[in-house]
Image 1 (tube, rainbow over the protein chains, first blue to last red):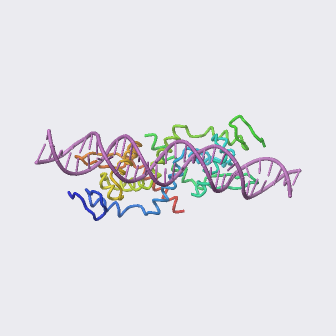
Image 2 (image 1 turned 60 degrees about the vertical axis):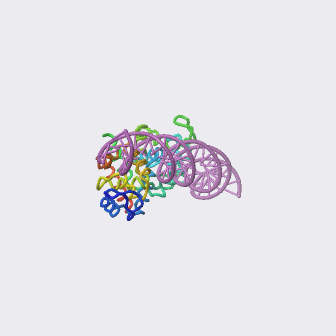
Amino acid sequence: MPKKTNDLCDCRLIHRKSVEEARASALAPNETVSLAQIFKALADETRLKILWALEKREMCVCDLAAMLGLTESAVSHQLRLLRNLQLVSNRRNGVVLYYRLTDNHVAQLINITLEHLRD
Amino acid sequence: MPKKTNDLCDCRLIHRKSVEEARASALAPNETVSLAQIFKALADETRLKILWALEKREMCVCDLAAMLGLTESAVSHQLRLLRNLQLVSNRRNGVVLYYRLTDNHVAQLINITLEHLRD
DNA sequence: ATGTTATCTGAATATATGCTCAAATATACA
DNA sequence: TGTATATTTGAGCATATATTCAGATAACAT
């Protein structure tokens, strides 16, 4: 059992092969960043409530604010974040912007996680 | 079109019916909290790398640290978080603790999100 | 143009979080 | 017992982030 090797890093290392295999099959750096960004978007109660609501109907900013008991500014900030990640889209009707989910991936993710929680 | 109603909250309100329906079908508060906790766990690059590695093989703390180029302390802190959410489990062999994924939900979540990113 | 409404934006603040460091446990073995 | 190794833990710091507030845009009506 090697005490310390410096080939891969300066940490202790017990199972060299596992480490090498794990490194070889690791996520690409840009994939890791993108994945984290999407999960971060889902990692906030306000955004989850917004997404869950939009999964069933399109809604405008002030309706979402009313539903959540938050300012429209707060909701708008969150919608911008979700829009930048293309998780939600909108259509304009006069001064009113109607938001909806871009696709059904988000709903899938929430539903799988709800399943997981019921174990 | 009502200018302002105070029945639901003190915000403006354009589509009363949408707001009421959205409230009626909203996630339960404890569900929202739990969902956010799980997604927070996935919303960090280090934890994503750990989970992705453990999806294919069990690994001990110092191997994960070597793989990631982080201290064992940092990895241990993250593993505790994942353990508390029952996303990972471990088995002890002497002084060494081997970590693995508790079930396949996490891998599902990551794979669906990877799919989403390829659009 | 002017005013009104819906939404957006930037700055500021308060809280959450990831890592490091130092020290504490837990197990194995002499 | 005593020592060594693998892991855990708590405190502290630096960064990220959710909301609020004040003010700026955008579309429409008059």
